[in-house]
Image (cartoon, rainbow, N blue to C red; front, top):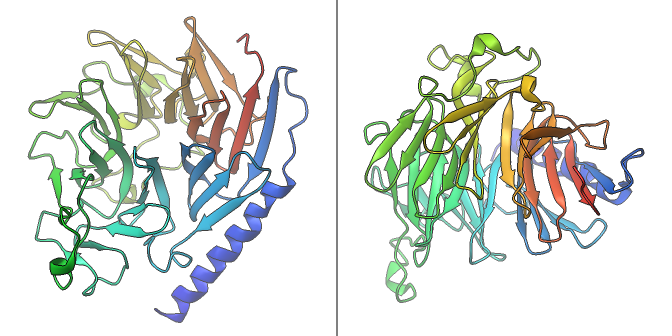
Length: 397
């Protein structure tokens, strides 16, 4: 490792440690409604993802992962590439998900997919997988096309059969996560019975994807997948692919929505001519949610939020009451209420009407990139500046 890399890692760790000390100094934001209690945690980094596992919140930041004990004031653990001795390959984290076995799956920017069971780290890449990121004898080396689709991972979802679906920049990958484990050839003869090397199957545009850059995954009750890409939406039932784009009703007309000059494209590859991006793209889908009625919601890059009930499309924008036209995150809380994280706050939809929380109410920052809802009814929002906790004693809307 070069002296530059060591210096960078030390600086990242020091920055995370100092910035997250704000957890111990947090205080409720003044001026909220009497039924709402707001608490903000400044991390100094964008909170891209939130996952809940019991009392613990797992936060995916631009510079690492934080496990926060929500039943304490400030107890937390910080995970970076340096602190995990290479178990985590990249500090840029875009997705954190927890499976039924309480394993934490972490999708990174340029470092593949890492899985943490509480004691051990396993990392998957297109080229190999293993406990230690050496690419040496400790790793299982994948044959061409049998590894993870790409090193850039944006979402992970789990099906009822133990499979993990992974959204990458080079397609949709699936791995059977039940009994497999990365086994190096040197140690495969001594492996535990029943374990086999994890191999991925990756679907690309040749299979039916409308675009190879996949950002969001949602599963229906019957197991069918909905995928948000840079070219529109796909539905995949395991056999048949169906595509929906702006021509079908996805997203608002870019000419009809105002641009946001401060909005930055979520992907650096848009600096290339092939993937140039304007201020609004109705086919660029960053988030998906399925509500209790089975309707699908799609958050777009600058073209609002679209709802599809299987027959009809309807798109909501800021003009309809949505907080902003850039929709980064979607979720359904325990009351069945749909929430949208936008560039203009956290919006929720009920009784045919949109309402929005902003910094005026107590939100730490109006750019909301992630959200989660715990069993106690607490709403958690990941923002550009950190984490916001919202407790509502009685929500009258």
